[in-house]
Image (cartoon, rainbow, N blue to C red; front, side, top):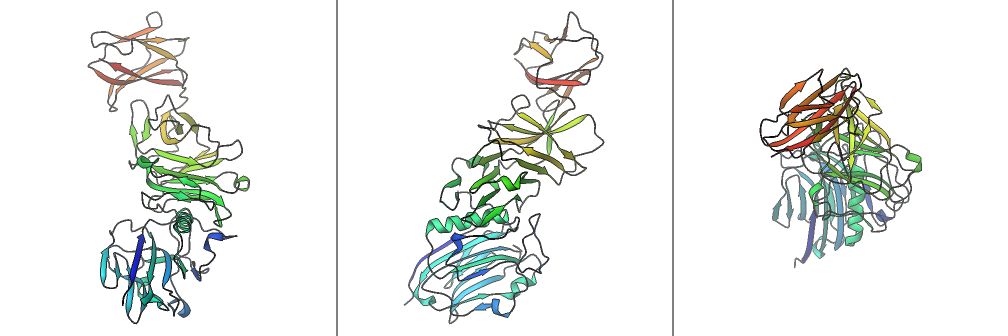
Length: 438
């Protein structure tokens, strides 16, 4: 009689940098461990993991490997528009089939949402006496579609514990640039939480990271997310990273275009990071790619990595970090040391020679609609002065060069109530602040 007591399915996303596996204690006990074939040139994204595309005969079917309690974990990419069987766990034609858009267990079909085609992790665990000494059969026809690939397959002839499963999924998620399901936390080999999905609920999109962990056999020096290659993170000083040191990041789901904030621009997306430790030794590199808005000839603007202790990152509150190199499609911020309390970052485009120290004062602020705005210039000297004013939506309402001051003050009547951004340029230096009109 069929005795199916438990079946668990977990899914996530895929990609990242292959590393040599050292003393990987969490994978001990696996009797099948397939990884990318060495001479296979197929890659996915930056991290160049090799897929298992051309299985030889001994890898097509694993005879009589299943036990009454078994655990199988597979990392794969697939074409969501075409239903294809990836592998079967069966005995005498009965069992479990993992397909690209569904899972079939003893005739009962569960649909898998056909999204995140950049890849998934599937974890299958079961207690079932009918599958004892059954076969694991990888469907070689799955590889006929060029969008389909298996990157790693692990089999344990036992039901592994929840803790071990979570450690393995964390290992694979970081290795391949995967986001686990939004309610799944990330753990190191000591089962210490390194990413809390509840605390980071608003930044649970595209979670990926870098880190070293001897117990996981993980030495991930750089990574991008499999879904989005806009941001790459890496260690600058790769040889100085200690064991169980991680940097994980997730974002708020907004787009990666630069939007005008009045006087400057910023990427709409904000990232939150969780560093296992913040010290004076570990340095990081952030790289922006796939940008069509960067021009090396634009000498009037500078790109900044903007780091803050608050998710509401403003030009005045953020720590602004300059690029170390810049091309027509890439920005590099290298040798960055994180500071205590900092948890959020984005990217900004600010006027060249922008200074956070105020070159001017505005009063009153807030200002009533019947009052003129008074801009006091502290040290006008003999340099040229220019003033620009934008609405909060980035609409330019005032721009004037060669400003003439009256006792170091320039007056301007705002047209209506609202929030405005005022930028003052003195010589080659620009400073910006916000004004509220009631």
